[in-house]
Image 1 (tube, rainbow over the protein chains, first blue to last red):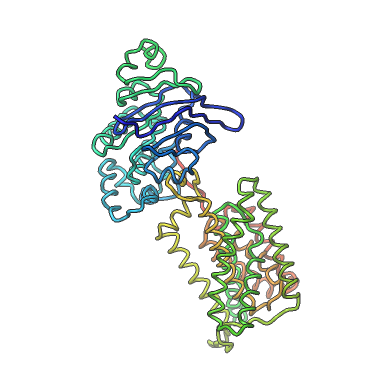
Image 2 (image 1 turned 135 degrees about the horizontal axis):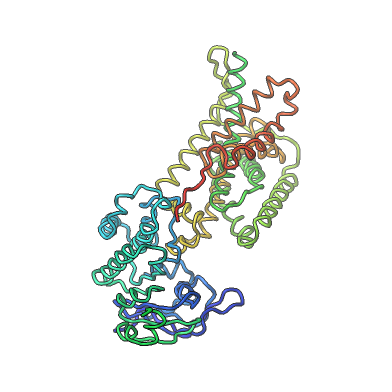
Length: 237
Length: 293
């Protein structure tokens, strides 16, 4: 399958500190790719680098088009939805207003009502809370809202930053299941960054392992899962 | 009793003017987290532009709306040209820049138009309305009416339009807004434009009362700060109610507390700022945001 997103020699830095040292990776069209790694390996920075939210060098191609050097707003408009670390909820706004902002960049607005229905089907709890101030939602509900907000833009690629962070295992499983459904039914490709390696490897087709800003291993998720080193360091058995 | 009601009524009238400038202050503060000290002087300068157009024999309402539009564009350009370069600088830097703008507008207005007071026309008839023994100035009523209309338009804009929603979002969470495809820096510029437009309306409403001169907004700006503080910098409705409260309080204290009179009225505004900041720092209508993590 052709790559929807491809990074070549991607570097990123905060101030003088370089965090990514020449990363190369690809996300297949229609696939789920995961980037694993410990705290501080550069997983979040990788996603931020794709959206040009940090200072980067190296090439990033999306759908055959170079997107490095573009503004974040413009990259998003090409069909990349980014669910950021910390969920990026607009806490003062209602759930529905959050969703409406998700669709902000879309030119075509006539099917907006359909999209509300669609995401409320995936996340019925959001429908119950649509008039509620988003800051009062629980962590799990806010994570659902973040995914729902991303879906509202009708993305072709979904960047998910640690959706499991701080959530109960049951909720995490629920969110992962929905991500899988979205991937299968809507042909949305996914780039997932996770600390929970076991769940991420179950979900993903392809995986990369990051250590201090470098790719140290990559391959089909099923193979990485069997790898002894991965099993010991990241799966814990 | 008649004197009391009369003082309340005229307090509401001046309060309406403080309210509209306070509204402009609150808007910029909400959109950008910056208190614009030049807001009053921008309003004054816009009013001079209107005066120039009136001198050129344009009908009042044509000049009025032209001024509002010019002020909007002016506010937008000021943000782009003057504020943008210091956008990420510490807050004090931005405050000093707006103070610089204050001095520049004041001096340029004095240089172009001189410091001699000029009469400025009111769009409303000069004949006051009497109900019993109470006199309502037509201009005062009109000014309050315009402030309320502006407030309602503003409310509707922020509440019901996508652009208004995007502006609120950009102010609250710029990073997420960018990820939604919102052009955040343009939203800030738009906030400055809108605030400048509303400031211009305040200026054109106040000029018939205090006469037009480069320093006419000095005291009013102070009252507007008091109004915004009383109402809470995070609440447009609060700014309007705060404005009316400040206007009425100032008038009543001036009338009934003999040692204050008209001479010390301005200190009432300062006292109100201090009292509110001590007792309820977010203002009467300011919200403390609920957050769960």
